[in-house]
Image (cartoon, rainbow over the protein chains, first blue to last red):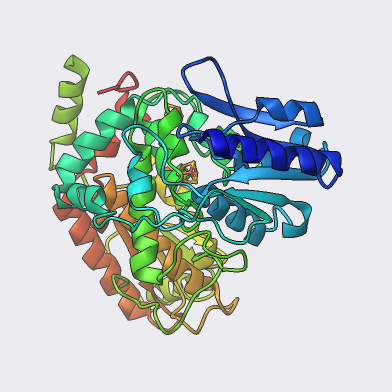
Length: 283
Length: 162
Ligand code: SF4
Ligand code: SF4
Ligand code: FES
């Protein structure tokens, strides 16, 4: 990790010195317990603030949606494999152009202690299509059982599931942290803020909470890359990632699709396929 | 707590209750089909409230949630048969989006039978009448949509936070 940090700083300095980029968006320590936050290095001397360790949870791609960040010129961005997938989704949705970005990929053997769930099932430890890659190639086969937790939920009866979710979602305080942190939630005006007519009630009450959490997940169908940030930042510890994961499983099974594997893919709802789509369940 | 019990007793009065069904019909096929059923004087239960939309592809899942929130016991979306959409591909998109949404509702514990999707052409007045009778029967069988009932304004149970 020490070594990676040194490599990153060197790379960032080189890019800033040569004015290849105007800004490097990366991770850097905050406090001294190894926690990492986002760092924006604009000058060569800022690179000392950058770092890499096993706590680089954030998906920095979210910052590329912010006008105040884009205003600063061409960015270089530090990405893990999963974050790289988020960039693919943003590129395919024409939020970003590949050539406007300098991508510094980091080969990653997982974050968190113990390892975050998503990292055990990760198939993109070595991000592809980057301008630079730091670290050695990682050989780490994905474990089986990625969707076991979804399966367990599916096994329950409808009433049990309702009990579970109405309890959990009833606790949502509507802080929208889950939305703010998600690279794919970039709408200028989120459906939850539309009030003429109002689609989603905004008071923290189960009725509006249910609509909010269901619609948030639905809008991410075939777009969520499973970085897990939404769930990680939820102050009420609501397992919202599980709802996204259910949809990830569904698009994989029904439409043979996984989000963010390439930057010219078509999302499952922006296309259709007469060979695989059926009238199953339609009267 | 008291008010919750009150709610249960209101919704458990079967003789007064009859299901409300909200149906989103595309203008070009299903709405015309329902019209034909009317012109042909086919009888079907009057529990259904029709909302005309340009195309089944226009139906945002938000409409469905909103209908449930406003007290629907069952929601139907109906459009042209695949291949017949007035806008060529609207129903192909609906065919992906809407069943996915239904699965999502099921995942959070809502009975998927409460959300129905159908293809009814402008010539299928008889199919329309029969289908409405069938889904009305189904809605009766499923009973009042208590989950949403308890959450809805109508029931004056606004403090519900489990
Ligand atoms: S929905 Fe959550 S897991 Fe999916 S991309 Fe957004 S923040 Fe990441
Ligand atoms: S982060 Fe959690 S509490 Fe906040 S709006 Fe999202 S689900 Fe609700
Ligand atoms: S116009 Fe009927 S489904 Fe599109």
